[in-house]
Amino acid sequence: MGRMELIKKTHACVRLEHEGRVLVIDPGAFSEQDAAAGADALLVTHEHPDHFDAAKLSAALEANPATELWTLRSVAEQLSAAFPGRVHTVGHGDAFEAAGFDIEVHGELHAVIHPDIPRITNIGFFVDGTVFHPGDALTVPDRPVETLLLPVMAPWSKLSEVVDYVREVAPQRAYDVHDALLTDLATPVYEGQIGALGGTDHHRVKPGTRLTV
Image 1 (cartoon, helix red, strand yellow):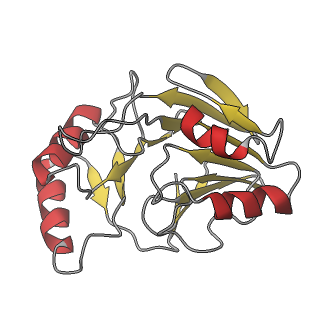
Image 2 (cartoon, rainbow, N blue to C red):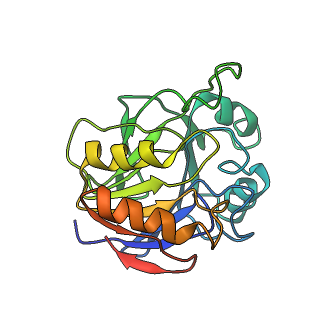
């Protein structure tokens, strides 16, 4: 399969395009209003609103009767009645095709925010054996990763964990996601430390940037 085009959207959302087909991952509340527009397939890693916006997903599903959604049970239960047969529940170890993209599911639980907060489910998506989006977890797939979508800043992580995650996955390149809360003041610190210590080609890209992966 040829290379894909990746379009960075705000926060955790990305669009992947190949041969006229569009796959959108995690169009959440922080993402652009049209983040899911035109999608042929939708993937959602978990139920937190910065990853899951029911209105954006519903609009995309209503606009194109052929569009389908793959996600975990907690999200699927909120949309399956409105879109029967088009919302699919998946979990760790599953593999499927979505609008011509080959998807593998890795991971089961959201990262620990605090010991007093119960952990929810979270799944990561490996697209075409090339791009891995872990959602809100530091999941390490059981095979090499070319492009890691790196959750760079979150209430559940610290910089040393992000660096160690990049080292463990050892991707060819890492592009930041989950970055809406990262201020301009902090950006050079994160870029410098991850770039110097992570051991891979690391980039922070602005929303709207188009990359070949």
